[in-house]
Image 1 (cartoon, rainbow, N blue to C red):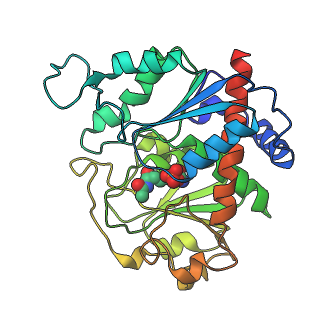
Image 2: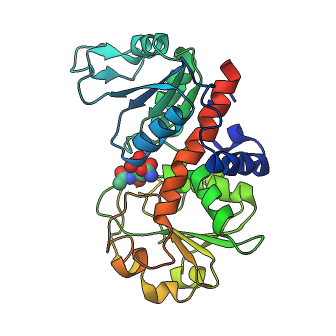
Length: 318
Ligand code: AN0
Ligand code: CP
Protein backbone atom coordinates (compact mmCIF):
# COMPACT_ATOMS: atom_id res chain seq x y z
CA UNK A 1 0.00 0.00 0.00
CA UNK A 2 1.53 3.31 -1.17
CA UNK A 3 -1.16 5.62 0.18
CA UNK A 4 -4.34 5.39 2.22
CA UNK A 5 -7.00 7.94 1.38
CA UNK A 6 -10.07 5.91 0.41
CA UNK A 7 -11.69 2.49 0.56
CA UNK A 8 -9.93 1.18 -2.57
CA UNK A 9 -6.50 1.44 -0.93
CA UNK A 10 -7.27 -1.23 1.67
CA UNK A 11 -8.01 -4.06 -0.80
CA UNK A 12 -10.28 -7.01 0.08
CA UNK A 13 -12.13 -6.49 3.39
CA UNK A 14 -11.87 -10.09 4.62
CA UNK A 15 -8.05 -9.92 4.55
CA UNK A 16 -8.01 -6.44 6.12
CA UNK A 17 -10.35 -7.44 8.96
CA UNK A 18 -8.37 -10.67 9.56
CA UNK A 19 -5.16 -8.65 9.77
CA UNK A 20 -6.84 -6.18 12.13
CA UNK A 21 -8.01 -8.93 14.50
CA UNK A 22 -4.56 -10.56 14.44
CA UNK A 23 -2.97 -7.22 15.39
CA UNK A 24 -5.58 -6.73 18.10
CA UNK A 25 -4.69 -10.06 19.69
CA UNK A 26 -0.93 -9.28 19.57
CA UNK A 27 -0.23 -5.64 18.86
CA UNK A 28 3.51 -5.95 19.55
CA UNK A 29 4.19 -8.71 17.02
CA UNK A 30 5.87 -6.32 14.56
CA UNK A 31 7.97 -4.02 16.74
CA UNK A 32 10.97 -4.44 14.43
CA UNK A 33 9.14 -3.26 11.32
CA UNK A 34 9.18 0.41 12.32
CA UNK A 35 12.62 0.46 13.94
CA UNK A 36 14.52 3.63 12.98
CA UNK A 37 11.55 4.78 10.92
CA UNK A 38 9.75 8.05 11.59
CA UNK A 39 6.09 8.91 11.21
CA UNK A 40 5.18 12.58 10.83
CA UNK A 41 1.61 13.48 11.76
CA UNK A 42 0.52 16.86 10.37
CA UNK A 43 -2.62 18.45 11.82
CA UNK A 44 -4.37 21.42 10.24
CA UNK A 45 -7.34 20.77 12.62
CA UNK A 46 -7.98 19.61 16.20
CA UNK A 47 -8.04 15.95 17.22
CA UNK A 48 -8.15 13.72 20.27
CA UNK A 49 -8.66 10.14 19.01
CA UNK A 50 -6.76 10.35 15.73
CA UNK A 51 -3.78 12.00 17.37
CA UNK A 52 -3.55 9.47 20.21
CA UNK A 53 -4.55 6.26 18.42
CA UNK A 54 -2.31 6.83 15.39
CA UNK A 55 0.67 7.71 17.59
CA UNK A 56 0.04 4.62 19.71
CA UNK A 57 -0.25 2.41 16.61
CA UNK A 58 3.07 3.74 15.28
CA UNK A 59 4.74 3.15 18.67
CA UNK A 60 3.37 -0.43 18.70
CA UNK A 61 5.28 -0.91 15.42
CA UNK A 62 8.48 0.47 16.94
CA UNK A 63 8.38 3.81 15.09
CA UNK A 64 9.46 7.26 16.18
CA UNK A 65 6.73 9.90 15.87
CA UNK A 66 6.81 13.65 15.18
CA UNK A 67 3.57 15.61 15.55
CA UNK A 68 3.18 19.00 13.85
CA UNK A 69 0.21 21.22 14.67
CA UNK A 70 0.22 23.70 11.81
CA UNK A 71 -1.87 26.23 13.74
CA UNK A 72 0.26 26.12 16.89
CA UNK A 73 3.78 27.36 16.32
CA UNK A 74 4.34 26.56 12.62
CA UNK A 75 4.31 29.20 9.89
CA UNK A 76 0.89 29.85 8.43
CA UNK A 77 0.83 27.90 5.15
CA UNK A 78 -0.49 29.02 1.77
CA UNK A 79 -2.31 26.18 0.01
CA UNK A 80 -3.39 27.94 -3.23
CA UNK A 81 -0.98 27.79 -6.15
CA UNK A 82 -0.05 30.85 -8.20
CA UNK A 83 -1.05 33.47 -5.63
CA UNK A 84 0.91 36.59 -4.65
CA UNK A 85 1.89 35.87 -1.05
CA UNK A 86 1.39 39.36 0.37
CA UNK A 87 -1.05 38.28 3.13
CA UNK A 88 -0.55 36.54 6.48
CA UNK A 89 0.77 33.21 5.06
CA UNK A 90 4.56 33.08 5.47
CA UNK A 91 5.27 29.81 3.64
CA UNK A 92 3.84 27.81 0.75
CA UNK A 93 2.91 24.12 0.89
CA UNK A 94 5.13 23.68 -2.18
CA UNK A 95 8.23 24.14 0.01
CA UNK A 96 6.79 22.99 3.34
CA UNK A 97 5.70 19.56 2.07
CA UNK A 98 9.01 18.37 0.57
CA UNK A 99 10.81 19.74 3.62
CA UNK A 100 8.56 17.67 5.91
CA UNK A 101 9.25 14.68 3.67
CA UNK A 102 13.01 15.05 4.34
CA UNK A 103 12.52 14.36 8.05
CA UNK A 104 10.31 11.27 7.98
CA UNK A 105 9.41 8.01 6.25
CA UNK A 106 5.58 8.22 6.37
CA UNK A 107 3.21 11.20 6.60
CA UNK A 108 -0.31 11.32 8.09
CA UNK A 109 -2.36 14.42 7.27
CA UNK A 110 -5.51 15.89 8.83
CA UNK A 111 -7.00 18.65 6.70
CA UNK A 112 -10.77 19.21 6.98
CA UNK A 113 -13.01 20.63 4.30
CA UNK A 114 -13.14 24.43 4.40
CA UNK A 115 -16.88 24.20 3.51
CA UNK A 116 -16.81 27.39 1.46
CA UNK A 117 -15.43 26.16 -1.90
CA UNK A 118 -16.95 22.82 -2.86
CA UNK A 119 -14.60 22.28 -5.83
CA UNK A 120 -11.53 22.85 -3.67
CA UNK A 121 -12.85 20.46 -1.00
CA UNK A 122 -13.98 17.69 -3.37
CA UNK A 123 -10.73 17.82 -5.37
CA UNK A 124 -8.88 17.12 -2.10
CA UNK A 125 -6.33 19.79 -2.93
CA UNK A 126 -4.39 19.67 0.33
CA UNK A 127 -3.82 15.93 0.79
CA UNK A 128 -3.21 15.51 -2.95
CA UNK A 129 -0.37 18.03 -2.71
CA UNK A 130 1.14 15.95 0.11
CA UNK A 131 0.91 12.85 -2.09
CA UNK A 132 2.48 14.68 -5.02
CA UNK A 133 5.26 16.64 -3.34
CA UNK A 134 6.33 14.79 -0.16
CA UNK A 135 8.05 11.80 -1.79
CA UNK A 136 6.63 9.67 1.06
CA UNK A 137 3.66 7.34 1.51
CA UNK A 138 0.78 9.50 2.77
CA UNK A 139 -2.32 8.52 4.73
CA UNK A 140 -5.44 10.47 5.57
CA UNK A 141 -6.23 11.30 9.18
CA UNK A 142 -9.47 12.91 7.86
CA UNK A 143 -9.21 14.89 4.67
CA UNK A 144 -11.83 17.09 3.01
CA UNK A 145 -14.15 14.35 1.75
CA UNK A 146 -13.25 11.17 3.67
CA UNK A 147 -12.12 9.78 7.04
CA UNK A 148 -10.98 6.27 6.09
CA UNK A 149 -9.18 5.37 9.36
CA UNK A 150 -12.50 5.99 11.11
CA UNK A 151 -14.50 3.96 8.59
CA UNK A 152 -12.04 1.05 8.81
CA UNK A 153 -12.37 1.09 12.63
CA UNK A 154 -16.18 1.18 12.18
CA UNK A 155 -16.02 -1.84 9.86
CA UNK A 156 -13.89 -3.79 12.35
CA UNK A 157 -16.34 -2.88 15.14
CA UNK A 158 -19.40 -4.00 13.16
CA UNK A 159 -17.67 -7.26 12.21
CA UNK A 160 -16.93 -7.88 15.91
CA UNK A 161 -20.45 -7.14 17.16
CA UNK A 162 -22.71 -8.38 14.36
CA UNK A 163 -24.83 -11.48 14.94
CA UNK A 164 -26.14 -11.74 11.36
CA UNK A 165 -24.14 -12.28 8.19
CA UNK A 166 -25.66 -9.15 6.60
CA UNK A 167 -26.75 -6.74 9.36
CA UNK A 168 -28.97 -3.71 8.77
CA UNK A 169 -26.79 -0.62 9.30
CA UNK A 170 -28.43 2.82 9.46
CA UNK A 171 -26.51 6.07 9.07
CA UNK A 172 -28.65 8.82 10.59
CA UNK A 173 -28.12 12.56 10.39
CA UNK A 174 -28.55 14.23 13.80
CA UNK A 175 -28.55 17.90 14.82
CA UNK A 176 -25.47 19.96 15.72
CA UNK A 177 -25.09 23.73 16.15
CA UNK A 178 -22.06 24.12 13.85
CA UNK A 179 -21.35 23.32 10.20
CA UNK A 180 -19.46 20.01 10.01
CA UNK A 181 -17.83 18.33 6.98
CA UNK A 182 -19.38 15.44 5.06
CA UNK A 183 -16.15 13.44 5.39
CA UNK A 184 -17.31 10.99 8.07
CA UNK A 185 -20.70 10.13 6.49
CA UNK A 186 -19.20 10.03 2.96
CA UNK A 187 -16.52 7.64 4.06
CA UNK A 188 -18.84 5.53 6.22
CA UNK A 189 -21.19 5.15 3.23
CA UNK A 190 -18.30 4.22 0.95
CA UNK A 191 -17.18 1.45 3.34
CA UNK A 192 -20.66 0.17 4.21
CA UNK A 193 -21.58 -0.10 0.53
CA UNK A 194 -18.36 -2.01 -0.12
CA UNK A 195 -19.09 -4.32 2.83
CA UNK A 196 -22.42 -5.30 1.23
CA UNK A 197 -24.48 -4.74 4.40
CA UNK A 198 -28.17 -3.81 4.27
CA UNK A 199 -27.34 -0.09 4.37
CA UNK A 200 -29.81 2.76 4.84
CA UNK A 201 -29.14 6.51 5.10
CA UNK A 202 -31.68 8.80 6.76
CA UNK A 203 -31.60 12.59 6.93
CA UNK A 204 -33.88 15.61 6.51
CA UNK A 205 -34.48 16.79 2.96
CA UNK A 206 -31.65 19.03 1.77
CA UNK A 207 -28.93 16.92 3.44
CA UNK A 208 -28.38 14.54 0.48
CA UNK A 209 -24.77 13.38 0.24
CA UNK A 210 -22.85 13.30 -3.06
CA UNK A 211 -24.25 10.50 -5.28
CA UNK A 212 -20.85 8.84 -5.61
CA UNK A 213 -20.89 8.19 -1.86
CA UNK A 214 -24.58 7.25 -1.54
CA UNK A 215 -24.02 4.53 -4.15
CA UNK A 216 -26.59 1.75 -3.77
CA UNK A 217 -27.67 2.75 -0.25
CA UNK A 218 -31.38 3.24 0.37
CA UNK A 219 -32.21 6.83 1.33
CA UNK A 220 -35.17 7.13 3.72
CA UNK A 221 -36.40 10.57 4.81
CA UNK A 222 -38.53 9.14 7.64
CA UNK A 223 -36.03 8.50 10.44
CA UNK A 224 -38.38 6.23 12.42
CA UNK A 225 -39.05 4.07 9.37
CA UNK A 226 -35.30 3.83 8.73
CA UNK A 227 -34.69 2.63 12.31
CA UNK A 228 -37.14 -0.29 12.05
CA UNK A 229 -35.31 -3.60 12.45
CA UNK A 230 -31.84 -1.98 12.44
CA UNK A 231 -28.87 -3.82 13.97
CA UNK A 232 -26.56 -0.78 14.09
CA UNK A 233 -27.44 2.92 14.36
CA UNK A 234 -24.57 5.17 13.29
CA UNK A 235 -25.30 8.81 14.12
CA UNK A 236 -23.46 11.78 12.63
CA UNK A 237 -24.12 15.38 11.80
CA UNK A 238 -23.03 16.89 8.51
CA UNK A 239 -23.64 20.17 6.70
CA UNK A 240 -25.47 20.38 3.38
CA UNK A 241 -23.67 19.14 0.26
CA UNK A 242 -26.11 20.22 -2.46
CA UNK A 243 -25.87 23.66 -4.06
CA UNK A 244 -26.66 26.42 -3.31
CA UNK A 245 -26.41 25.42 0.38
CA UNK A 246 -22.98 23.74 0.35
CA UNK A 247 -21.45 23.82 3.85
CA UNK A 248 -24.55 25.35 5.49
CA UNK A 249 -26.56 24.30 8.55
CA UNK A 250 -30.15 23.94 7.31
CA UNK A 251 -31.64 22.47 10.49
CA UNK A 252 -30.87 21.98 14.16
CA UNK A 253 -34.17 20.17 14.74
CA UNK A 254 -33.87 18.04 17.88
CA UNK A 255 -36.69 15.85 16.59
CA UNK A 256 -33.76 14.09 14.82
CA UNK A 257 -31.80 13.45 18.07
CA UNK A 258 -31.31 9.70 18.63
CA UNK A 259 -33.34 8.80 21.74
CA UNK A 260 -34.54 5.67 23.52
CA UNK A 261 -37.98 5.79 21.91
CA UNK A 262 -36.43 5.59 18.42
CA UNK A 263 -33.89 2.94 19.49
CA UNK A 264 -36.90 0.84 20.63
CA UNK A 265 -37.94 0.60 16.95
CA UNK A 266 -34.70 -1.23 16.09
CA UNK A 267 -33.77 -4.89 16.52
CA UNK A 268 -32.00 -4.02 19.80
CA UNK A 269 -29.41 -2.11 17.74
CA UNK A 270 -26.00 -1.05 18.87
CA UNK A 271 -25.39 2.71 18.92
CA UNK A 272 -22.26 4.03 17.20
CA UNK A 273 -20.69 7.48 16.74
CA UNK A 274 -17.15 8.42 15.69
CA UNK A 275 -16.84 10.99 18.55
CA UNK A 276 -16.52 13.77 19.56
CA UNK A 277 -20.28 13.82 20.20
CA UNK A 278 -22.57 16.52 21.56
CA UNK A 279 -24.80 14.87 24.16
CA UNK A 280 -28.51 15.63 23.97
CA UNK A 281 -28.06 17.12 20.48
CA UNK A 282 -26.86 14.07 18.51
CA UNK A 283 -27.89 11.45 21.09
CA UNK A 284 -29.54 11.46 24.50
CA UNK A 285 -27.60 10.58 27.66
CA UNK A 286 -29.87 7.58 28.06
CA UNK A 287 -28.83 6.04 24.73
CA UNK A 288 -25.12 6.82 24.82
CA UNK A 289 -24.92 5.58 28.43
CA UNK A 290 -26.89 2.39 27.68
CA UNK A 291 -25.34 -1.06 27.40
CA UNK A 292 -26.03 -1.01 23.62
CA UNK A 293 -23.71 1.95 23.09
CA UNK A 294 -20.36 0.80 21.64
CA UNK A 295 -18.76 4.21 21.10
CA UNK A 296 -15.79 3.39 23.36
CA UNK A 297 -14.87 0.01 21.75
CA UNK A 298 -15.36 1.77 18.40
CA UNK A 299 -12.83 4.45 19.41
CA UNK A 300 -10.49 1.74 20.74
CA UNK A 301 -10.48 0.16 17.27
CA UNK A 302 -8.93 3.36 15.89
CA UNK A 303 -5.59 2.11 17.21
CA UNK A 304 -6.12 -1.14 15.31
CA UNK A 305 -7.17 0.39 11.98
CA UNK A 306 -4.24 2.80 12.17
CA UNK A 307 -1.84 -0.04 12.93
CA UNK A 308 -2.95 -2.10 9.92
CA UNK A 309 -2.54 0.93 7.65
CA UNK A 310 0.85 2.01 9.01
CA UNK A 311 2.10 -1.60 8.92
CA UNK A 312 1.12 -1.95 5.26
CA UNK A 313 2.70 1.41 4.35
CA UNK A 314 5.91 0.41 6.16
CA UNK A 315 5.93 -2.92 4.30
CA UNK A 316 5.83 -0.94 1.02
CA UNK A 317 9.09 0.89 1.86
CA UNK A 318 11.03 -1.82 3.76
C1 AN0 B 1 -15.28 16.52 12.85
C2 AN0 B 1 -16.17 16.17 11.66
O1 AN0 B 1 -17.39 16.16 11.77
O2 AN0 B 1 -15.61 15.91 10.57
C3 AN0 B 1 -14.37 15.37 13.21
C4 AN0 B 1 -15.04 14.05 13.44
C5 AN0 B 1 -14.08 12.94 13.61
N1 AN0 B 1 -16.11 16.82 14.00
C6 AN0 B 1 -16.15 18.00 14.58
O3 AN0 B 1 -15.52 18.92 14.11
C7 AN0 B 1 -17.00 18.16 15.80
N1 CP C 1 -13.15 10.28 15.55
C1 CP C 1 -12.10 11.12 15.41
O1 CP C 1 -11.43 11.18 14.37
O2 CP C 1 -11.84 11.87 16.51
P1 CP C 1 -10.79 13.07 16.64
O3 CP C 1 -11.34 14.21 15.79
O4 CP C 1 -10.75 13.40 18.09
O5 CP C 1 -9.47 12.63 16.11
